[in-house]
Each structure stands twice: as C-alpha cells, then as structure tokens.
Amino acid sequence: MKANKWLWIVLGVTLSAVVLLGFLFLAASRDVFAHAGQSPAQPGVAISPGVTGRVNGGDVVTYYHTITNTGGAPGLFSISARASEEWPLYFYNTQFPTGTVFVLPFMLLADETATIAVQLTVPKLVRPGTVNTTWVTATATFTSTFPYAYAAAQNTAIVLRRWYTPLVMRNYAPFLNGDFSNGLLGWTVNGVLGAALDVDPDQPANPVGRVGNPGFSCLGVPRGYGSLSQTFSVPQAPPGKSMHLQFRYRIYSNDQNVSLSSDKDTFDVLVNGELRWRDANRGAFNYCSVPPYDLGWKLADINLGANGMLVELAFQAHNRFDTFYNTYVLVDDVEIFVGD
Figure 1: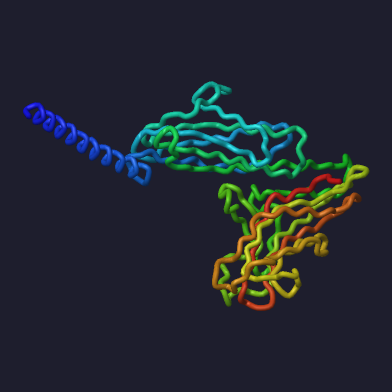
Figure 2: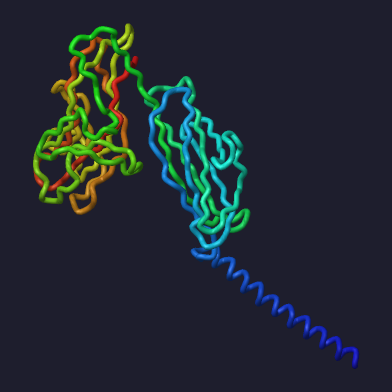
C-alpha cells in the first residue's frame, strides 16, 4: 500500500509536468502561428524597383537590387529570378569581388540591407524588338521551409532596331527621341485634347508620350483629338528589304468600338495623312461610371516600303460622337528599322 502511494505521487507529478509542458507547447505554438502573420517580431522584406533599358544582341546587362529586412527580427532571405525569354541569368553579391557566386540563403538583421546583382546575357542572335522581362523575387523565411513574405521587382530589356542609312541623302531629317527620354523634343502637340509627357504605369522611371487627356470626366469630354507628330526622313532600304516603323501603345478608354468605326473613339496612326493603324477598346463597356479600361501595352509594326521617303507621322487619340466617354493613349519606343 505504501508503494502504491508513492506510485500515485510519482504519476501525479509526471502528469502535472506533462500538462505544464502541454501548456508551454500550446503557448509556443500560438506564438509561432502569430509570427507567421503580421507580428513585428518577425522578418519582413522589401526590394528596390527594377528598370527598363534598351539592349543589343550579345550584351550582358546587370540589374542591381537592394534587399531590406523591414521586420523586427533577423531572418533568412533567398533570391530567385526568371527571364521571360529564358535568357541566362547569374547572381552575385556586390559586396564580394565581381564574379563571386552569391551564397543563398543569407541572414539579415532587422533593418539591415544587402545589395545583390543579377546579370542577364542577351543572345547574340536575337530578333530585333524582342522584349524580355526579368522578375527578381526576394523571400523572407520564418523557418528554413516556411515562406514568410515576398517582394518582387521587374526589369525590362528591349532589343534595339538598327538603322540603315545611305552615305548620301540630301535634306536628311533624322527621327528624334522615339523613347521620350528627352521629353517631347522633336514632337509637335496638336488637337483640342492635347498631348503630354507621361510615365509608364509599370515602370514609373520610364517616360512615355501621351495623346489625349485623362483629366476629362463623364459628360465633360471635348469632341476632337489629341496628337503627337513628327516629320523625318526614312532612308532607302537595302536590296530585298523594307523599312519599318514600330512602336508600343497602351489605350485607356471608357468607350466601346467593336468594329473600329470612325464614329466612336479610336487610336489612329497616320503616315503622310493616310491612316495606317487603328485600334480601340473593342471589349468591356460600362458607360463612364468606372475608371477607363486599361488595354495594356501592345506592339505595332507598319511597313514603310523600300524606296525611302519623307514621313509625317502622327499619333492621334480621338473622342467622337458625344461628351460622355474619354479615351487617351500612351506611346513609347517608336523606332525605324530595316525589316523583311
């Protein structure tokens, strides 16, 4: 009986210890799950924005990004990158000698930063006008396997077109400032809707041209157009080739024009007064009670022939029929190149 008494005492102490350990485990577990949320006692992550640039075949482009631990505790950080064209990518840490492989993952204390670099190799044989997007993602982890937070940056590389210019060309007027890096230099603004310098919504550091005005509201939209125009010389193409005009554009519109008719809003591109390109919002439509529909960036190509000519180019955003619906258009990367 005495032995049994001590047995019950031992069992009671053991069970009490188990219960205590259980409470401690639950508390720790609750703390772990709290950390996996928005607790300031855990690491956070931010990454500096990307850039847009123009490249040639064979170039090696380096993108620099600063990673910051925005949380209140140290954390492990990893970096990943992906190129939309699947071009080769290479990491290195700029704090090490150039070419030293960046070891992942790495530790950052609270508010500490690290600068990393991603090298993109452009193939030597690449189609002019190709656009590659490189996404760089930083991940802060709560444990070695549980992702805590992500931040991403986007870099864009646009392969340049190459001019063919005859050795002798009288009264030659060069094409200027197709990327709007010098504001509206070389461009003429016309029309009641006007035109202006703007920025790419995806890359705020990248300037673009804009025809039309986003400031007009429902029932207050003037009928007419806004235009950016430029006059320049296009040289004769080499034998068997032709000269091309290429540009990117992004339409914002509340109007709907399924058939691209001339009685509703359009984006028009004129070459020497002739309509050579037309686009519009051909899909969604909800009057003017919502923000304008963003159709995203599109690429256009116009064949200018082989003989060479003096070109008057005009980008025009048209608001037609009534004062209800507004349309404006961003334009960028206007280039002249030799094509097939």
